[in-house]
Image (cartoon, rainbow, N blue to C red):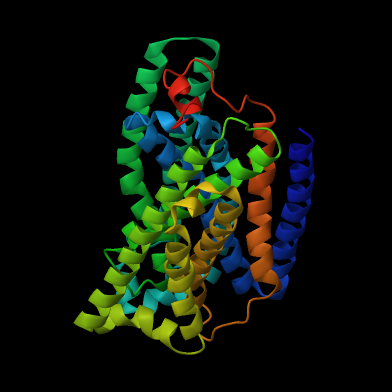
Length: 382
């Protein structure tokens, strides 16, 4: 437990310093501070909602091997209400972030035509509804899990499967709408039907990386001794698969738009092709897929925590870079050099995330009780 207390103290300091820096940045450079707050908030919302999605996938699939990791996924999902508050904190700055929210948009024919959908009141309402539905499902799934600790009833497992199946359907639709709203409308003249799936892939791969990182650190601290190389192997395979799925979406979106060469579609990539963004544009693909693909190919790389941990950190960094490349060029066509606000936008929300999750790990048993697949998970490939 000393390790958890140390993580909590460090994470809380980073969260306070990071968020305070962004608050000061609102007076110095509001566009940059708000954009980085948006990026950090979307990152941690993705980790929380993505953990619930993976938990539900494993629940519906009756994946017994993953029961040892269930509390890690639930801990991530429990942060969703705080993540929602971070995201909602960007809404007072809608006019700074989004061109369609500014008064001048009424004089733009294209933006005016979209005003029935892209207006501040409806935008905030959709955000609240999406986050509210996710929180509702997270509360229900977590309460069923805790109830199972107290009562050995198979009915609780069956109820969890039903709720998990429902969340997967809801998540598939709402996460695409969220990606369209929160990120794509930063450049409201551009559109891509692949953008939602592209962000689903990014959420899943970064969440798997975060789960691997948390599980390894918990095991090193002696708090998750049940974790074995076979568990890590399966998580590593998910990291490998989802990073390749993300790369497939990246290439599909880019090549289809490049090949069709329609001006209202190519404008997104034109900005990221010039003005200093090109190195970041290609680094995104290298860090997000090429390097992890090569590093995760060997079987032992997925089973050895010393090798898997830095790969997980790399994939988390790749998700932040991906979000930075999606959001920043909208208001900064000339690529800025990453600075204090980028660092604050990363460590502030992530610090709060680590503080909350590690605090939860100290309050609930890290191994679930009475799960019908627990024995299978404890003896996974042993």
